[in-house]
Length: 219
Image 1 (tube, helix red, strand yellow):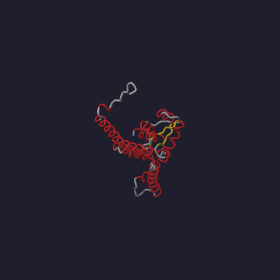
Image 2 (cartoon, rainbow, N blue to C red):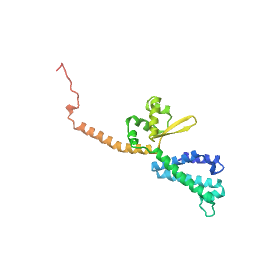
Image 3 (cartoon, one colour):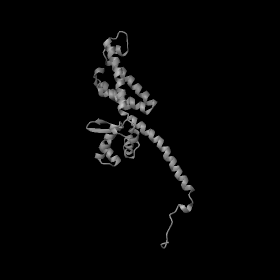
Image 4 (tube, one colour):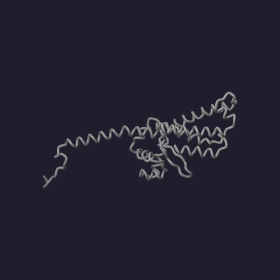
């Protein structure tokens, strides 16, 4: 979550009042909250909560007196300011719900996640965000094939992208990360059980069945 802290710090340097905050920053905050919740990591949630509290207090210092009164819900706060503050809270909740819903997928979500054709993409993006060319090299497929599969993954809410200058990086959505890890946690014991079964069968097989027969002289 150190990246989130630096985003907040940069935002505070570039604005004169909370009204200057760009909509993109709200989307970033929603993404960070969703990621922290999806990871089910209490430490990450606590860290993000602390960062948001610090950011909120810093914004209060830059806000007009009426806005501060509305944010603190004091009786003397103007009705217009209080209404705007409440609408902002509801608006963020709606934005967060909509953004989270967009990243959830239908029944084909898990099916695609666990398919052999897409598993390589998911595993590569679990390690790090990748451009299309980097992903092509990682999975050993042509860029045209990668572009086509990425579109499928984006349509399902499995993959999203972000721009860094002229480069576009693909990354797994939080729900895809959680679903893939759940799928893997179920599949690993199954694979281990099959491997143990094969090893047990091998031990129980008589020695003369473990070797290929040798045919001599055409007999």
